[in-house]
Image 1 (cartoon, helix red, strand yellow):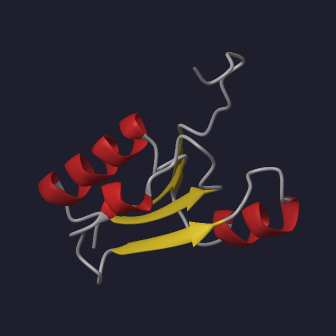
Image 2 (tube, helix red, strand yellow):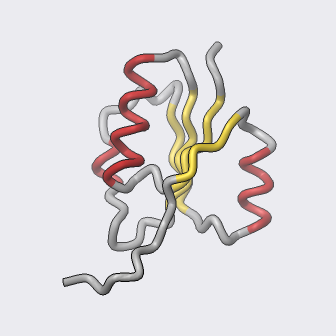
Length: 88
C-alpha cells in the first residue's frame, strides 16, 4: 500500500491535475479536501479510482474536520488558496 495523502484544494486546476498524476503513477490513496468555491470544480476529479480516492467538501479553517483528516493520512499537499483578485 502506498502513502495516504490529503490534498487541500484538490478540486482546483493545479490540485486536480496533481491528484490525477498521483493516482495514475503511484499506488497512493488520496483524500481531497475542498470548499468548492468559484475555483473548485468537482467534475475535474471524475474518473478517479473509487478504491483509492475520496472527496470531502469542507473548509481548511474547520479545525475539527482537519484534525480528523490529519489522523488518517501520512502527508499533506496544500493547494487550497483564495485569490486576492476579484473575478473578472
